[in-house]
Length: 248
Ligand SMILES: NC(=O)c1ccc[n+]([C@@H]2O[C@H](COP(=O)([O-])OP(=O)(O)OC[C@H]3O[C@@H](n4cnc5c(N)ncnc54)[C@H](O)[C@@H]3O)[C@@H](O)[C@H]2O)c1
Image (tube, rainbow, N blue to C red; front, side):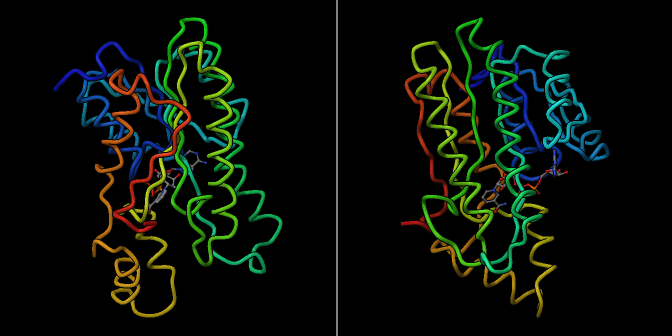
């Protein structure tokens, strides 16, 4: 199948690297016009060079005014992929107020502002698909040393289900994606930041995956593509786990 997103206009956050970048490319290859956003201008420039259907804008998802201005100037959109997220490592006792607030600002408040900005345009036209990035570390599974992260990603699931319920009869769908561990640049940063041998730290991430390997960004992008496309028209308010069997 090709042209699965023909005539669709998609907004993606954190599209400069990792899952967001793989998704921007997957959407563009399937015929979507993509507005890829990020805080990293260099990453956006290299992404835009990869496909002519991708245009880019700088967007810090923690800035509510920036979000509204961007949507006013570039919307309306058929698809919103809220991909931006931040991993704070630690137990509740390791989590100070600032880290807790930062985690909610990037992982949850951002989605509140983006959904609120994009929804009126979707409702006016009676169509839209919102995809929110959660994680297996959420209401699906408790993961050690991910206290603030897990709390925020559980909130993403609640936010998703609520939007889906409110607009189910008005053509707007809202679904969440819960990946297991995926090989992205930020995972590399987290591994390098750990104490001890880097190779051994990589192995510990791989060992907790029953398939014996990490996920690839493209494997998550494939699910986002399905949820963005009309082939998933009967799917809303759902939580999609793509974790190589980790939570099973
Ligand atoms: N990688 C994993 O193992 C994994 C697993 C489960 C869920 N996730 C979730 O997937 C999403 C993407 O993660 P990833 O690992 O692919 O990418 P990542 O964490 O490496 O980030 C990708 C991009 O986010 C941008 N970014 C950072 N702060 C931003 C901000 N305030 N506003 C806009 N952009 C910002 C960075 O510049 C970067 O280009 C996150 O929500 C993450 O929590 C990742």
